[in-house]
Amino acid sequence: MIEDLLREQAPQVLAALVRRYGDFDACEDAVQEALLAASLQWPGEGVPANPRSWLITVASRRRIEVLRSEAARTRREEAVAVAPEPEPASSVDDSLTLLMLCCHPALTSQSQVALTLRAVGGLTTGEIARAFLVPEATIGQRISRAKAKLQGARFAMPPASEQPERLAAVLHVLYLIFNEGYTASSGTSLHRVELSAEAIRLTRQLRAQLPAEGEVAGLLALMLLTDARRPARTTADGALVPLPEQDRTLWDVEAIAEGTELITSTLQSAPVGPYQLQAAIAAVHDSAARAEDTDWREILMLYELLESTAPGPMVTLNRIVAVAMVHGPAAGLAQLDDVDAALQGHHRLAAVRAHLLELSGDEVAARQAYELAARLTQSLPEQRYLQARAAKLSAGPS
Image (tube, rainbow, N blue to C red; front, top):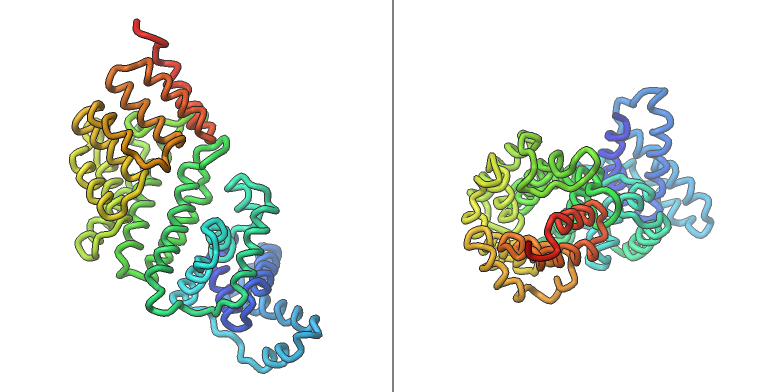
């Protein structure tokens, strides 16, 4: 499809222009105009033999036109006029450089996400706004502020000393994009498939560029193994189906096989990191033909290792669930009060408490916890599910 081709070429075209002209903001505008021209012309005239060169040429012409219309930039125009035509962007260096630039430490996490989706993912401002359920003007302002902050930034890979930290930021942004796509934080739909699919696509590209980076492979494996369950996560009317109740014959076996092979080989060849451990946990879940076949002892061991490697309140909460599955709900409930204060008031904490209370037989307390969790979440599918769980429990002892 032409749309997929344009989305694939967009970051390379932008990288070529920024490398040549600088001024990320103006170059991004020129690329967007070139993409628009291609979307209008190519369906009727056919895709050119070299789509990237066509786009670079059109975008470059637009950039030069703007320069020529600005009298204050006469000297810069003269310099551009004698500059050699840009080489087609390197699929390795420029894509990675562009990702690193979009995840510059001067930007907020929200701005990094928006700019990455716009500049590297090729999504329009409207598409990003619809995915995150915020006004288009809000996303536009975020992107504009981000590009303004990058005006002085050089289009080049960061120094070697800064690259590990910048790569960590890139992985975090891709992880955030995937998570929002897999479980939308608000709205009527559980999934934002365009976001999870885009995160997987970008992570595949990153994996091709950095094949020796274990955490890149780990993140890709995690996405594949998690997204494989998406077909079974909702009913025909969009209602949430929890993992133990899912029809596992609906899971994507090809994605599971790819993700399992990837994480297995990565754990054997690279230093272990948090994304790899999360992928290993997902692989254990996906390998169980039935919910009751899940190896919760292995999952608990992996969560204990993850908590020691990358501690955090959500990791602790997930470990407590594994504790309850191995040692009984009372053991899990006993540890819930130790969860970080950052999760107090979060619907996930209330939902876990409700589930463990239900397993322990305390239906009254479980119902109250489910109702609290339903009030706390902004996701309508999750809210409906939690309300349904509460409704199934008696209001008091029978």
